[in-house]
Amino acid sequence: MKIYICLSLLILGFSLHSCGENAANKKPAFKINFVEETKKFKLGDTLKAEIETMIDKKIDSVVYSLHGNRIGQTKGNSNLSLLLSDEKLGKWDLTAKVYSEGEETEIINEFTILNNVPPVTYTYKIIETYPHSPDAYTQGLEFYKDTLYESTGQYGSSSLRKVDLETGQVIKSVELDKSFFAEGMTILNDKIYQLTWREGEGFIYNIDTFERIGRFAYNQSKEGWGLTNDGEKLYKSDGTEKIWILNPETLGEEGYIQTVAHNGIKTQLNELEWVQGKIYANTYQHNGVAIINPENGAIEGVINFSGLIEVLGNKEDLDLTNDVLNGIAYNKSNGKLYVTGKNWDKLFEVEIVKK
Image (cartoon, rainbow, N blue to C red; front, side, top):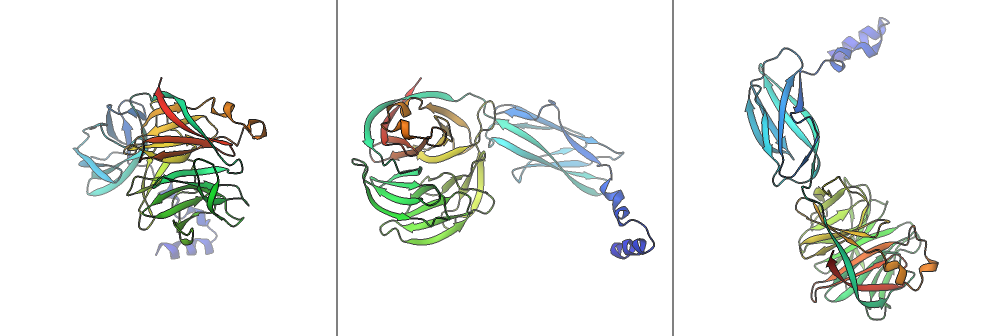
């Protein structure tokens, strides 16, 4: 009926823009306010929210939700009080369904949850040094059954490799088509999963033959950066603050955490590695590795690897803007941790030392 009314008005010379104009400019009936007059909270804080009535309407009740889960209900104009004790960190929407005079209205207000403690700072000690191929623009590095695997990037030279740790020699490799820029990789149940950067898909390989046996799409995430797994699920970074959690069977994105410190949300997390229940993540173009709680996204520690580049044999040949620290591999069978960088000629076994 509304379409015909608008068409009739158009024929009579009225502007079509006027149809529905009242609805578009209608004053909202309600608004969510935070009592503390801030949208930033920390773990341990109590968030208090209230509903402001913008027009003359009586509120019967309000149902609040966070992450799609109901967190509370209030009667009339009573305030919501929520202790932020075990919530995921980052930017989230507080949703309120307001029931008033027989009508239901849904309203949203965004807020941020920060960690309540600063990250612990660490430095390192070099335990052993190994050769690393200087033509490897390292994007992913991982041990699987005591064997080292590596994903290398750049259009025209991207590859997947099996590498001899002691000599740095490539045992087996497969090249990607020049239209793909390879990124992070991880290995789960004898399958290698490798990301591409901006091509919107990843590849699956047979670990013995390196035969490509499947592909998977990224869905909501726009790019591929780092990839790791906890033995069950896969975790994928995309250059934003989000680390996506992937279903191991479908590779679908089933949710995400956001990487957050005590003072803000952090982005540019690149190569990922699962180390003793935490996610270690390179920060692109920085010398730091973040230690992330995979449950809530809290950055619990930062390892400063400044100085590693100074002991390389090919430092003078590197582009210091792009040939940066990137590559973390943890061998869980012996508890040793290894790091390297893009086009670096050395790979280091390191010990992490608390400052």
